[in-house]
Length: 569
Ligand SMILES: Cc1ncc(Cn2c(C)c(CCOP(=O)(O)OP(=O)(O)O)sc2=O)c(N)n1
Ligand SMILES: [Mg+2]
Image 1: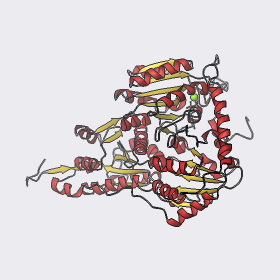
Image 2: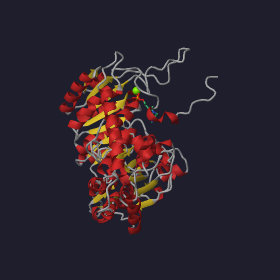
Image 3: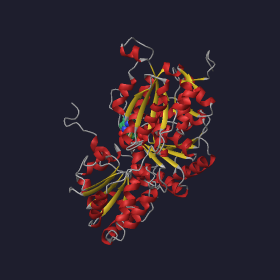
Image 4: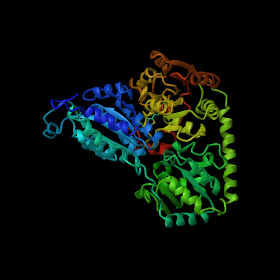
């Protein structure tokens, strides 16, 4: 395109696309509509990937977990203005809470109309609405600012503690033009967006001293260590020190769950009895009972905390040895400082090993239990998946629900890092199908999703998306016919229990979109279906009928559900 001076021109669409490509971004997840449909069309015509979803929240979850898996590059979600932006905002907040690097880009109304509240099409002050829910919120008003605006968004999303960034794109920006020459001068790739952040020498010395004097140390591995891809550094530290480790949900597989130093099978005993806990990219939040109470033996432990965010230190408990920096740098230096130090005391590691072996024996008995007439339970069904994943470790495992989440996390061992992708810090329901699309498209590996039947309901329509892109995804519905359980009595007066669901034929839902559905009632049927489904590399859904009475209310966080003191009035 050129103007009367015969100068070759480009426009906002192409400067944005060229800037994203310059930063190795070749994929967007989203839902098209005014004013971004033609951006998505041009993006695909340029040979880039656009995964078109049925709801922006799931496109956003896909972008959030794509960022987590990639680590040094954010996932990108593109939405229309106002309602589309708001649908994506939950996922942006989820990314920020979980420290996943993600960019939400939404088309928007023009400032002058929004600021005078003159009633534009889908009018909303999106940049300011997003700001409290993400690391940063930018608006790009001029075509010349696109390169620096995207560079800022990428660096903010991936550097330091990663998180979500919002980029507001007023519709008129796309129609602005600029000479191709000038655009070439402006477009750049930011240098070193995830710089090493080296901890202070005295912090390393202090932490090494605390660890050397520990009688009953334990390491807690968080998803921050998994996302940092500190696989080698974690292995070296754990094996040189001999210290037992506990992985948080998404850190499973960073060290194989079958490793002899894993204390996961006796987490409660390890946390209550330890005297020093070394937090590696893990926060002392609600998932760890804030580092206090009976979980921790009702006594203050000595904490060593490795975290890239300085103000995470002392968030819940005093930290005896804070080590602020990136996980790789911190662990390498700490391992060096501990060279030659005695390993963790055999008395402690032996006591843990004994407990681990006992608890694993109990679980094995539960997994081998015969199926009751009322259906499989979580143990004898997930025992099948446990065996399958041990034989096929390079499969992405997506997981959400309550009992479906807690039991899968406890029963199914992970052998590889960044393969277990779950509800994360918020315990949000609805991440399932979006995560499946991203895990399959980012890694190219098969995906298995273990879904509570209620959790699946939040994103179930994206089965059509999964079928449209013919992705190697096997969804297992743990169908107990309810939220937590499926047998709660109806309250009478023709009302239906608030926790009950239809124990439906989700397998037929998958068949409706051309995928393969299986209905299974026994572990044997589940095993056969799982093997066939994953081998097919096609979209499949296994509807696993689970005893409605098998679960417990709210999994292991029942205490968070306040119960009325006055009962029914
Ligand atoms: C967005 C959202 N809504 C509601 C909830 C509350 N919730 C809900 C609705 C869950 C579903 C539990 O039922 P399920 O069928 O998925 O799993 P199980 O029946 O196997 O426990 S777990 C849970 O915390 C949530 N965490 N997130
Ligand atoms: Mg359920």
